[in-house]
Amino acid sequence: MTQPTATLLAPPPPVVSGDPGTARVVLSRFLRHRLAVASLIVLVLLAVCCFGAGWIAPYPHNAQDLLAASQPPSGAHWLGTDSLGRDYLSEMLYAGQLSLAIGLGVALLATLVGTATGAVAGYLGGWPDEVIMRVADLFLIVPPVAVLAVSLQGLGPSPLTIVVVLSGLGWTLIARVVRARVIQLRHQEFVEAARVIGASGPRIVVRHLLPNLTGLIVVNVSLSVAMAIILESTVSFLGYGVQPPQSSWGNMLTQATGLIGTSQAYLLYVPGLAILVTVLAVNFLGDGLRDALDPQGRQR
Image (cartoon, rainbow, N blue to C red):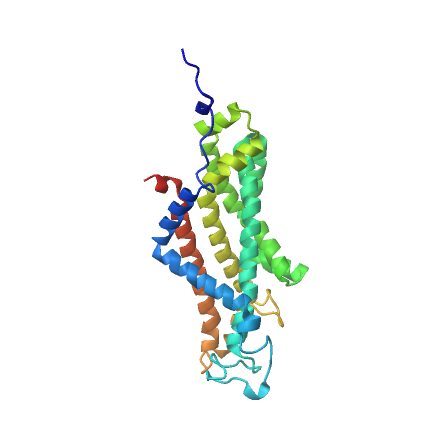
């Protein structure tokens, strides 16, 4: 009787790996999602223009010319000027730096915390699972706008405070999603095979479970970016968020609210349109990446 080979006990490779063939399949699937590709182009252009504002913007940040205040769009000022004589296009680009940085910071921090806690809860089960999920339930019932406004009042309206508070509120959703998926996967054959050959719990989670969650994690990052930008804009619009001389798209909305019904009402619509385009592009990009990284979809 022949002896079974060791390969029968070896776990299959993770769904997402560095294999060039896998990368080509993912790229091919992503490129077929036209909205996602267009959204990626839009976001790259936004990021380049905003974070490169020091070289691209026609005027310095907060440069005032009171003699040119409240001017309509012209060759010198493509989006006109505000009541302080600042070039509105330049202010939009500099404000975008802060809005995008807050969105990315919240998404990365919340996803890191949520993925780690959700994976631990799902893999270990028992009392660690109960404790983590009860804490997550507590955070889920807290109104984020109210908590963020109170925190900014107490700790100061700094971008770092916004990132920390929103990350502390936003990790719970991805934690629940990751936990549910890990519970589904932890008793499957490739996980059991990894245990048989002596893989430790952390190695199983990192090497075999998390690669199967790539699509979920990527989608959460995109949703977290959109959520953070919207919440920051909301609290800034209410006057609790970023304060001058710092600029974000949210406080630009606040400064332009008094212009409704005037010839300069478009100054309200421009930052609102920037927020809308960014949020839609991030969501479409997340959809495309989810489809491209979907393991079942790649097998079809």
